[in-house]
Length: 124
Image 1 (spheres, rainbow, N blue to C red):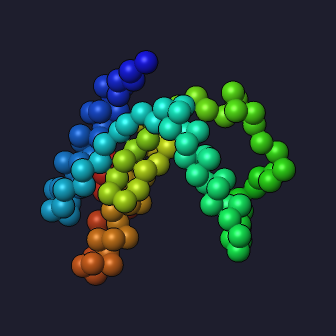
Image 2 (tube, rainbow, N blue to C red):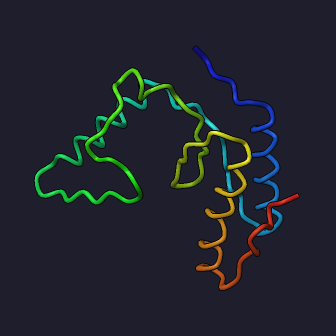
């Protein structure tokens, strides 16, 4: 089954790419893509393999029950991902996209130039 990016998400990513270009002079190149169930399974298996390697110390952040896990059928349904340079983030709502882009842009610009756009610079 082929997944088509929702039009409002595509418009938002286009708007944000343009805003970042105007604010920083940089081409962000953000995009949205579908991560399939099969791809999720492969990524999950890779993570499990890495976590079980000899000498690896696993540190869990946040609140979770490390003993609990969903069954395979419950775990993998595919999802939309926001793709940014060096980063890919699961996205479940168009309203999350601007926050992710802002977080991705502000710190690197600050570190590189000593100045960066103020938080909220991507808002309409």
